[in-house]
Length: 403
Image (cartoon, rainbow, N blue to C red):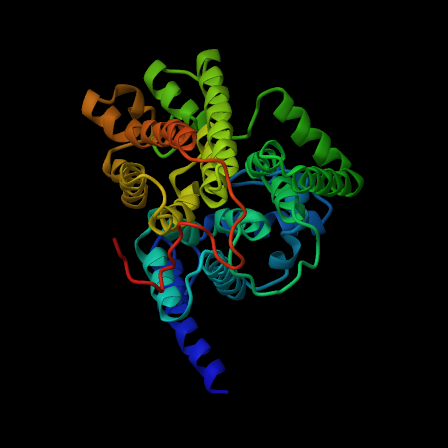
């Protein structure tokens, strides 16, 4: 009983912090009486579930558009039947649990887990805004990490094979497929194939239940329409294609080529690092690659900087210069200084040089982190079998720094 009371006490601060963010981060919400009216993405999900239950067209609803695959729409029904206030609380607390599970997998426990969760919720821009908007980014990161990241586990045995969570996440939003590709090319064929199979099954289920919506979504995607193409130049689109579009005025073929090259670079870095015994760093760089190479990656999508920062802090066998650079990049994404600039209405096309440096600097730094990952991997010895229960070169946040 004492142990469970302690766990509840440690859970209270991050849960309260999430409620604070849900009530203050976005205009329209309020802390007292508590309201999640500003969680506009969650409202899109709830509206989609309502339209789905009514037999309507999920892509023709008023307000912000539904831009995810139809399979994701099937998962919104549960939140559609809940009252708005309860839906907001449940969503926030599920996000906190998912982020806590990611940190637990990375070796963070006890009061340090509670404290780090509160810090991420309040001060890490991607996490803070993801909670404020009611976005699903935390779940996507958690699916990939809990599926394939080495580390502490709650259950001694898997219930379903490795790869299924990544595949389901890819059926909800395509970016986690980069992690599945990383696993496959890193020599972990089975998790990669399981991810592909679960993606196909989930997408096939959506075709069976929502054939018209599925044809609409996948047909538009094949034509290059993501549903938000007009927002590519927006300053908070922190992708390679966003940088290209702001610098050259349009998302031309050169930007698509640059995005494709970034994808190859990131997968190359992640695979090489995995084969050199840096499985954790390889996985988080694959996740980062999915954001840099995606046509649109809003700044709050970069929840991957949380596991990236923890891994860089823990892995003492990495070169100090690389860890220092990586942690500086994480700090940049955490603060997101470019958000202080005026934006929207194509203002980005008239930015001065210093404004471009501030807006595009994070993306360039992220691509450089991938490139330097290749350099680091080439300087590491081939992977040796890890000692049971311990990842070489890693310290946990329960240990004091040394050396």
